[in-house]
Image (cartoon, rainbow, N blue to C red):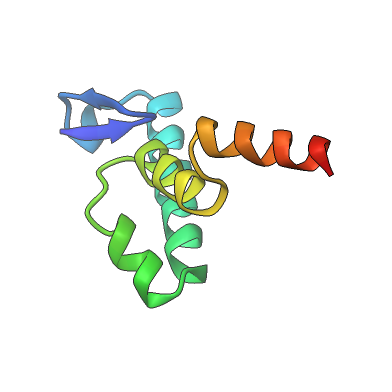
Length: 80
């Protein structure tokens, strides 16, 4: 079972077609790059994620906030 872009594929790596293998490899590389640059707290926050998308979403909310927080920041800047 392999997770690519949040989709679970019920095949072993050997059974995948070439394009699926490339997607799996690229996702693994991207996950490695992201985890390599994180500090320890951020790493533990995303270390149990099963997909790159899940990791990205957690980091996005952590650093930018939810859509409500973004909207509040925008309104505060407009008021200034």
